[in-house]
Structures are given as C-alpha cells and as structure tokens.
Amino acid sequence: MPNMSLVKNPMPEQEPAVRATNFKEVALGYTREIAMEEADRCLRCKNSPCVTGCPVNVPIPDFIAKIREGDPVGAYAVIRSQNALPAICGRVCPQESQCESKCVRGIKGEPVAIGRLERFAADTAMAEGAASSEKKAPCGKKAAVIGSGPAGLTCAGELAKAGWDVTIYEALHTAGGVLMYGIPEFRLPKALVAREIETLKQMGVKIITNAVAGKALTVDELLAEGNDAVFIGSGAGLPNFQKIPGENLCGVYSANEFLTRLNLMKAYTFPEHDTPVKIGQRVAVIGGGNVAMDAARCAKRLGAEVTIVYRRSEQEMPARAEEVHHAKEEGIIFRMLTAPTAIEGDETGFVKAMKCIEMQLDEPDERGRRRPVPVAGSEFELPVETVIVAIGNSPNPLIKKTTPDLPVNAKGGIETDENGRTGKKNVYAGGDAVTGAATVILAMGAGKKAATAILEDHPD
Image 1 (spheres, rainbow, N blue to C red):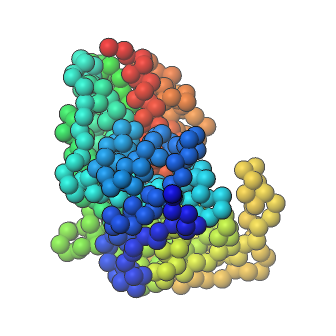
Image 2: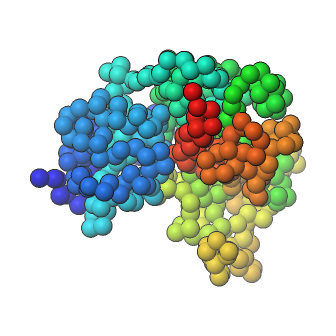
Image 3: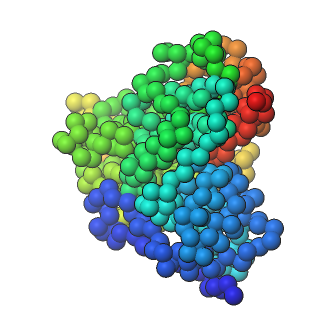
C-alpha cells in the first residue's frame, strides 16, 4: 500500500542564518530512510505521466521503485540509462514545472519529490563508487563537440556510449560550462560536477580546454580534420544589458562576470585563490530569474546588504519558487514593480546610487505577460556601491561569424530543426547556443536529441 501522505518529505537544509555566511551546499539531501519513505508515495501509475515531463525521458517510476526496494545503486543505473548527469539534474532541474508537474499525486496534494530522489540515488551510488561508464566497442566514427556545458556533455556521452571517438573543445580552462561558472557552489558543488565529467572521461571522451571555437579552431577546420559530425553546444555567454546611463561605471557587473569570478575562479576564498571580487556594503541585483537569485545570494554571502530590483510582480518572476524562498530566508530584500533608469557614479567613477522608478502592470504583451509601465512621479534613488545586471544572456556570435554558411534563428542563435540538425551538412547544435539562456535539463535534452540525429545520419 503506497504512502498516501499529501506532502513531500521536507529536504534537510542548513539553517538560513548559518548558510548565508558560507558557500557550503544549502540542501543536505535525503537520508536512506527518508528517501524510501518518499519513494513509497509513488502510485506506480501504468501510463507514467511523469516521464512525459522529462526532457531526457528518464523512466521515473522504475528508478523510484528501486529506491523503494532499498537499492539506490540500481536506481542510479536506471537513471543513467537516459540521463548522463543525474547528480546535477537532481539539484538544479526545475522539476516542479516538468516531471513533478505531471505527477498524479499533485492533483490532491504535493507531487512525489522526484528531483530529491534522483539526487539521493546519484549521491549514494557515487559515494559507493558505482558510477557507470558503459560503452560499446569503437565503431570507427569520430565527433567534435564544441562546449562542455550540459548540452555538450550529454551529446558527448551519448555518442561515446555508441562507440564514437569524441573530443570536447572547451573555451575556458576548466570543463563544465555553466555548471562550473554559472551555478553557485551552495547549489551545485563543483567537485560533484568534476566527478560527473570524470565518468565521461572513463568512457573515452577527450576534453581539450583553452580552445576557443571561432578563434583557435573553426567548425570547418574540425570537419576537415576528419570528424564525421560536429556538435555546437557553446551556450549563451554574451551578457545582456539594459542600456541605461552609468552601466560603464566601476562597480557594475554582468551576472556572468560576477558568478564566473566566484564560482569558477573561487573569488570567495580570496586570498587563497588570487581572483578577488570587490563589492560594496550595498548591492542591487537587476532581474528576477534564477541567475538573479544566484547573484544576490552570492553577494549576501560576501557580507553585503542585497536588494533585488524587478520590474514586474513576484507572480511574474521566472525564478524557481524554491530559489526565491531561499533568498528571502537568507535576508535578500525584494523590490518588486521597480525599474532602474540610471546608475550614478561619484567623482572617482565608482557607483554610488541607482535611480529607479516604480512600475504598475498594464495589459498583457504578445507573450501573455502583463506589461510593466512607469508610475508618473514615482522616481527615487537606491543608494548602492555595486550593481549586478542579471537580465539574461544571448548566444555568443563568434562561431556564427566564422562559419558564414551556418543559419541563424530569430533569437540570434544557431538555426536547427527539432532534432538539432543545422543547415550545414554534418553540423548539429543544441542548448543555449540555439535557444538563448534556458535550463540545464533543456540543454541536456537538446544534446541528447542531437546525438540521436547524429547516430541516425551516420549508421555503422
């Protein structure tokens, strides 16, 4: 008989006052007992609606059944059959809008905590040294993957399992893409990402760092070197700005730079690591997405008073509800229905304040979101020494500029069909390089689809 509790088992966490002063992981993970109790909430639906919400088609009831039986290593093997990065997905995927949104238990209560169970299975299996590195015998095919973020890692893993010789080319000095530079340590420990990447290496995947596609090498050069296929998973590394006065002042960061300094280059450990990041006592973060939450929570951990400034209401915020909740618990100030109009500097060129105006929501725009419009006479100044702009990123244009016959879509990304094929023969793409900034799991789904297309187009 299933456990018919209407609520999920809560995730053990660091206390807010403690975690706001450190970069250790906030969520501590389920124990074996809690995981088995939560797994018993699954109704074992015959049609498995939860699977339809998973971009990589993990057989969710099957892995939950293994946990219920007390076999987390077996659960991990089930997940790994479809998902190359389960420990990562269990932490950062928006399960509430994907697999868990389809869970039947969510009709009259809370859905099964699928993401928390996935994390438990992966963490337990990895702790017991049960990481999987299965692959077929070499098939004689060769692929180049540009970018080592979630799309590139997933595509590489799928091809390696099929016996392909795969080389990943990464622009930075460390593999992992946004998993390493964009997501804070307290949400996704970097040692865990490194272990997932090591599993791919054990499958034969080679990774070359400090290789900037479009400069050190081009798509055409990779094809000329004998690669049967090239996959572009270069992400969306070009920060967007508001184009308001003062964005060039000292003390204004893109969220991309701010998070890269902290996450990849460990600025929060200065002087142990020699990449400092200077912020004042008061920080404003512009934006309402997950990246804004990450930047704000990082700044808080560096000792600042942090205010998130967002031009719509909290109901319209694209950030995960869990991240907003954690930010509030940690003392982040939220100023909703507020838009910056200019950043002011002092006589030395450093930020001293941000001019803002209050907003109100008008009629919905073309996407159905109510349009924010200024409230006349509501201007005010917010005293700050640091401003972090977190309003999204666009695909980097470097590869497109050096590959003129590569079609581009309306968003400025690479044009592909639904399976990742571009208009250039033997070239595929997926993830943020196509869509602009999105989620880790959607990038993984795109990488997996592209790998399937590559295998279909290049049969043994």
